[in-house]
Length: 169
Image 1 (cartoon, rainbow, N blue to C red):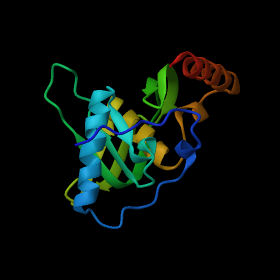
Image 2: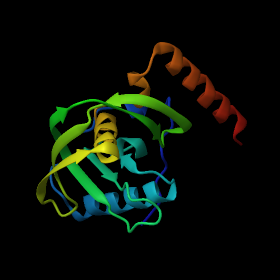
Image 3: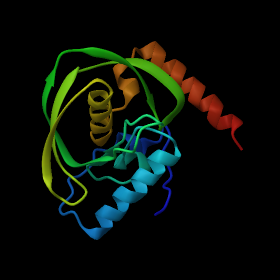
């Protein structure tokens, strides 16, 4: 397994729309493993393929607490079938290091996808898992969490990240 480079905002590749996965091959399974390793190493609770520069409709999520066993969920070619209710969650993103903002999302979602073996499944989710699914699915459509914020907050986040980038060696 290999740790992948996570793209940081404002990298234009984060705005690219991902393409469907034609078949779950050993190469796709290897990518999923590398994405999981990268997410855990970061550390984060989710990672979309577009965040590592791969234009494929894949994301991984694990919302287990540190004191709980890992529960890696793999979503290949996800489709959000239902969104109900409203919740506001303080979200972070591996492509926006050090940034956390309140984002309005659906409270309940139902998603259909393929797992790491290419088997179809459906999942209903609420709370953090619902937020993570929507957040990562947005990445696959080139939508970022800052797109859900006011223009002023987007500008402030852009300045903060530019300052971080110029300060790092």
